[in-house]
Image 1 (tube, rainbow over the protein chains, first blue to last red):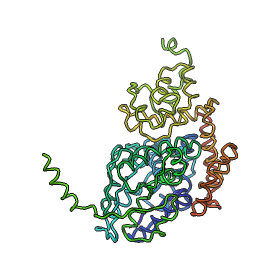
Image 2: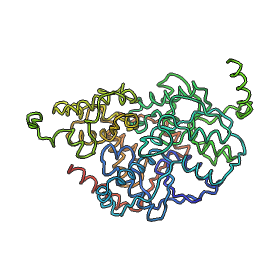
Image 3: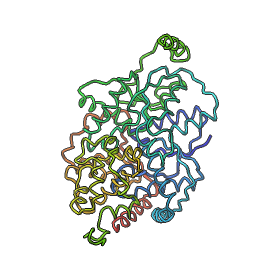
Image 4: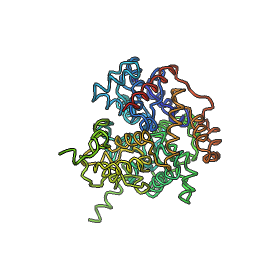
Length: 303
Length: 193
């Protein structure tokens, strides 16, 4: 399968292990990724905070370049980029005058034919085409799937999963032999763009997320966004200081978890780049149908 | 008569400018407070989101100004929780984007928002020249604008560097002239609003 690819700036810098793990998966799963030629930054939080037209024009250039290269579907792994590109496509798709104005600003015609996919959508597509996934080593761990804000909200723009209690990442984790925990902070905000300018607030918000995942019994947090990962992993020393508590729980990208299950090398997946060491406790019993069968009669006996 | 109710010209009212420039109407809000209940940073704000909206609904110059001077508009993370839950689908994040721009336009930004604003500005200034974000350059620029943050993250930075997470050299877009023009045109158009 061929998909357009917009890695975004983070994946070429501080989140390069997300990029590396995606490319490693692509190699294994027969996914051909074609990078959008000469792509630029989506403008991120800064652009939509300070200049509305700029926040539409920067993503519009990326989409127009993709259209020129005949890329109809583009994988945008970073949730922040995904949201900005989807928002631009949505706003420009609703207002022809605005679309003409933005086309003027970027000096290129933006038609609106390219569709953006987040990493979960892309993985589901690839797995659907591949049929059965060959699991080399079941990812036998309890994990808290953390979706964050921008992959599922606002629903009218992203049109993906449920905005309050999404399940798609949990389903993927089950497919690779993992056990997603039920927890309350799946879509709570990590503090995102305030990481540098108001680290105190990020520690407060991300601290609550980590605390809740630990309370729910998770061995790891699984994420799909480099901003979330930066706040949950790179900011961990600040968070621990703020919360007055140590949190050894690692944060992995969903692509790394899948990569491990497919038997890919840890280094190839960039696990060594995390600040919080990825140490996952070995679990004695694999979670699976046997365990569910064991639990059922017990529930019945109480009735 | 309409003029009696609105001693100022309508076009100067924040509520009217919001309709004109974002197509959102603050009148749709019936003050249920759902946005404030779900806002992750409401407790850090000087006014919770529903109150910011209320100030604008009333259409009084002093309340318009208070909304633009609030810290709330800068703390808003654009996490989109409010608009997702709003029974009236008021696009509050979009309104917040407008309020931030308007606050800067009128020189009313809250002094405590200085760090947040300078980070956004450093981000865009970096982007204008490189087209792709140059993280190290952004941090250096931000620190130059906020000397008090000079020591922030000095312990983390080397760890990131040795893990290959900090690029010493920026990735550049080939069409840098195009990017510069996009910035120029967007700034010009926005300044006329």
